[in-house]
Amino acid sequence: MDPQRRLIAAACLGGTAATLLADALAQTHGVASASSAAMASSSPGPAGDGRHDFDFFHGRWHLHNRRLKTWLADSDEWVEFEGRLHCQSLLGGIGNIDEVLADFGEGIHGLSLRLYDPEARRWSDYWATKRGGVLGPPVIGAFSGGVGTFFGEDRFEGRPVRVRALWTQPGTDEVHWEQAFSTDHGKSWETNWTMRMIRQA
Image 1 (cartoon, one colour):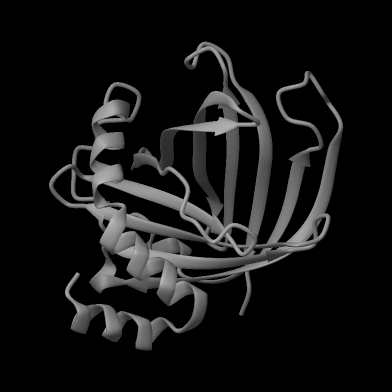
Image 2 (image 1 turned 180 degrees about the horizontal axis):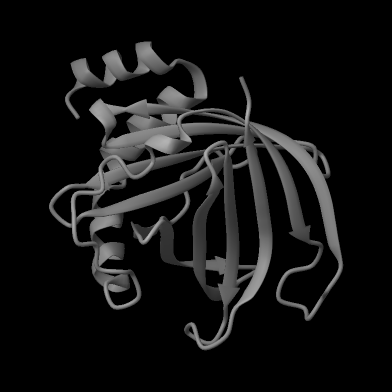
């Protein structure tokens, strides 16, 4: 992104979101391309143009979170907490960004940046928090049959993990998202976080 366009993006978004968007567009394109190739065998092969797949998610949402208290430790103890989210479209619809606030521990304040690659017909979904201020490795995927399936590679407490995120829309004003980790290259999965989202007026 040239400096003039970066300033325009910053002026439109403001604050942390603008900084992260500029950093993502300037620095993470290579990461997304490399991850796309690495995950090609795991991600679904979309048949059509998916640039409008996340249009349903634009707006304000109330979140009911259910999160595994301890991850990758054979735990079955869950904690539940509330939150809120606002998602808006970017780049004429081939991107979107949301900001999340939730009441968990000392509080969760983060954002997701999603970018659509029209050539590969896949979305890259990045996550960052106020605490770290760095975009993490993306999960990459697409929607098929009303289900969004995304995969990525990350590390958790020093251990390499494969990440899976699933999106479904049970109703017009309801969205379900869940995250799972695998330590055996996808042979088995531990779901560690689910989120039920209800649209707010």
